[in-house]
Image 1 (cartoon, rainbow, N blue to C red):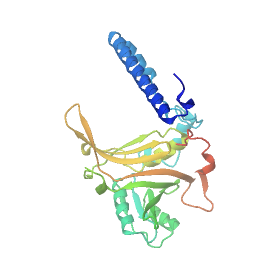
Image 2 (cartoon, helix red, strand yellow):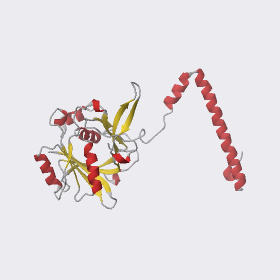
Image 3 (cartoon, rainbow, N blue to C red):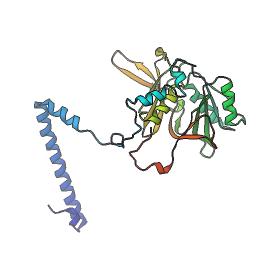
Image 4 (tube, rainbow, N blue to C red):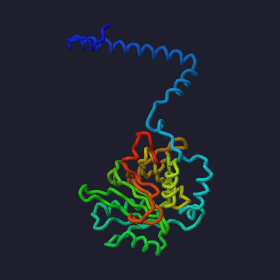
Length: 301
């Protein structure tokens, strides 16, 4: 049959194209029927086909990173003496101060309260006109282990960034904040209880990812209250960290459903700094720039 692209008459070209399309669909159906018959006779053929039929995605074809941590004893040794080691060895429990940028809107105050509800030991304090360094000193003197500052974009009317400062010696992480939804905006949401939640950290595989994962983990009490059936998830996918909170709902011994509690938002790491907040003389362990995006399959966390 003639190639449709070589036919100048558009009506004839469309007619030939539809015939070729129908013929291709017919052959596909016949092939499926033939394969189904063979697989019914030999189930191992189906298992082998499904095993080999893995679609290629950006995630499973990402570039290999030398910083990926598997069983690296050097990394584990460094983690035993890093800024979070005191928490993971049974030291001071987390105590978090959450505040906002100067002159916050009413919506930012509402989000700050919902954000703080994710962390059982967090409390919201008004910012006033104090500098970030002064607030960090204030929190350190009152034995806070972490300081969180939520910023907003006045033009776009919503929170757009968040700074995490681990006290008293850092590190400091700056994240871009997006896709914010409050609990009331989530259909069928539940109401959170005061129980200590479980924490799930997904896909923090590189050395930098380990640091960020340990940062988040250190902000929650180490022993959850399983009776509350609550879980907070930090899921990293392509360097975007999706934050969600759910409750397990057991219908029976075999079936479990998840009820979202909210809030939900997405974080993207922009920079990580050793020590506490210092934009002038700080030592940056990681700082993202557009020049680093050399490939769609290269990720840093």
